[in-house]
Length: 181
Image (cartoon, rainbow, N blue to C red; front, top):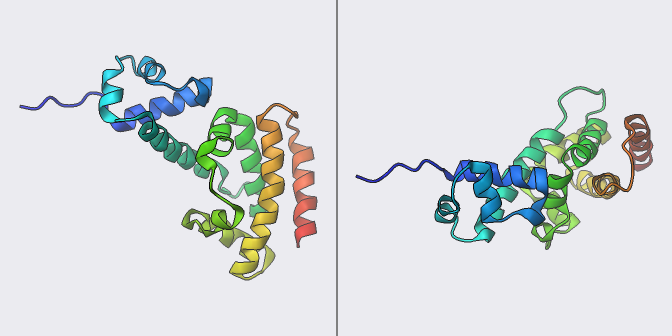
């Protein structure tokens, strides 16, 4: 009879995300993951044949966390402003995950048109289209402009070059949105 697995891929993926959150992706290895799980490296290496496989699974999970955190939840009148604020807040609250998602080689090969062509961007593009009253093509172009500015601000915060001031951030984004309209 086959032994049941005590350490699952999902548990390992959660542990990888935890390592990245607390120590950064540069500290990610089989030992650091095993330490979080309280096991040897054997289950980690059994479930994931290579570190690249492990990193891909972690990237997908981190992207899910990111998406859940940035989508508007109706806290502000303007869902687009809320989206931008949530994105920036994610960079402040989850600095290591933000860097892992957007400032390492896993993001390589993607360009602005590629971001808006991704089916996962559909919900964001619907928000842009609704808020600006524009066509899907115009929404893509508008999103690209907004993304560059919001991502730049978020990157500065994630890399500790600036301090987060919510009122200042909201004011800056409101002006940006008005300028894009």
